[in-house]
Image (cartoon, rainbow, N blue to C red):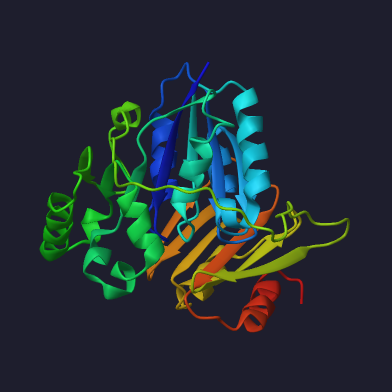
Length: 323
């Protein structure tokens, strides 16, 4: 039996996780879905957020799914398929090569087990006029392999941004199956079952990598904080994992994070106001109460410049009452 499977890709900050959360909230009540999450950072924020929906989630942290962790990715997919989900959603890192996971899913290993449906790419229309993105190979690749393109965050976009999105869609050859302009990652769930396009120009090659295999991060007994850094694709990340005993002052934490100039900050944090999900992208702050308690606090900061991690570490530890 083949499992319907979708790749939901998009560059850093395009809203992939929010879109997947929306899909999980609106899936048929009688269906069980599974999600495989890959993140550029080492801490694993998206998996913690998506688990709140009671969905079976597996994470492959530390960069591109195939480049950084090809073996763990295949193992994770196999494990999820054994649970016999009604659908499998795969979220590659926004800074990775989505074509590599596409090649993995269409390889002989999974061909008999996966019914690969459309690949969906989310894009912030504002980025389609920005040379920083238009010259980025990963940004270009993610949009090129997509069967469906979702222009997200239209509430933050100008009329010129919307025109740029529509012009881009109209120029695609071969054309995309579908395109939508949406807010907050809300797009019709029916899109998931669309059939992939037959693109004779699409070339997807398997890639091998002989680097270290990513290992799950855990705190040892008596340890209250763990920090990990990663870099690649012209970006740098630093993430923190705090023990369940640590509680942050919400107001102080949000004030400090809002002052950072980083391109992306994500976290699931235990605070004096409850467990909160934090999402800061290009200066736009989004905060929501988590739907379930978190055993640990996790936060990841990503930027195109290496930030003063030691200084930030000292501030976070002070806010956590650890120094």
